[in-house]
Amino acid sequence: MRATIMYGAGDVRVENVPDAKLIEDTDAVVRVLRSCVCGSDLWPYGSMPASTEGRRMGHEFLGVVESVGADVSGLKSGDVVVAPFVWADNTCDFCSEGLHTSCRHGGQWGASDVDGGQGEAVRVPQAQGTLVKLPVGEDSELLPSLLTLSDVFCTGHHGVVTSRVGPGKSVTVVGDGAVGLSAVLAAKRLGAERIVLMGRHKVRTDLGREFGATDVVAERGEEGIEKVRELTRGDGTHAVVECVGTEQSLGMALGVVRDGGVVSRLGVSQYTHVPMGFDSMMKNLTVTGGAAPARAYIEELLPDILDGKIEPGKVFDRTVSIEEVPEGYRAMADREALKVLIRP
Image 1 (cartoon, one colour):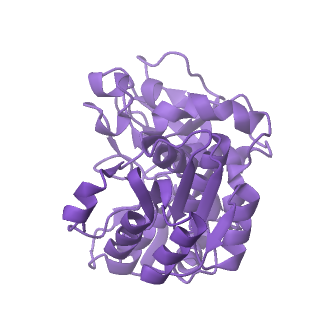
Image 2 (cartoon, helix red, strand yellow):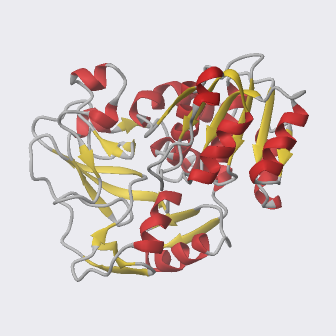
């Protein structure tokens, strides 16, 4: 089968790899209908050291069950399913607490002998706990939005939940990438009264307004902080969802949060220092967030997509075939595309 392999910065190839097959009785094999390139994939795309073996890529996919192991129940050949961006048994103590990213028997796509999602098929470990059956057909128009349940929309939702957004609250979203826009949509869904989107790419911020942003701030750094505070009578917002992952963006998040407020870190952190001193302590700020346990959120978010109340799939603005995946990476890295959808 064909699958995506990254060999180093800027070096993404689509090659023949062994067909996905059952290894453990808890496995399933899923034929991929839709996958995508994640913003987090751009970090290794920009900095990964050259490798002769390469690394299988892709952690967001949905598809059709082709076969299941002897110990898998509740799934059968022909079922359309979505896979969260980590696999998990959905039964251990961490999973029971809604923290599937820490599953005692889980892992990541593309690691060891596990396939990546950017390919024609995937062996899914712990299939019964990982996969969520979708009540749609293989040709459903909802597939792009349903794919966002694999990662990006659940991640935006996680940032909003952990920063305690709710009716009447105000929130700033730092970053106008797909995760940031998903956070805007999630904040609107949970009833936020004011949603400030910090971004400077008009096509993206226009979609942010469609998703529910009440204000857009294009300025960065101290100028951006001052602008948000002007919009909020000097106070800042109750919540901030940081969706970039740099120390500068975290500094802006801490600069625009209201006293007693919450900052949720969603961007894959490219820093080790958190710029918090005595002033932050006196403001009683909370810093939280992290990798989203997408599996914990899928059943909650799924009905609104099926009913057409939300359309998170609008973050996809380019579609490529499996052979065109390297071009998809380039387009996202060059900011020519917001998020690239893959149709194997």
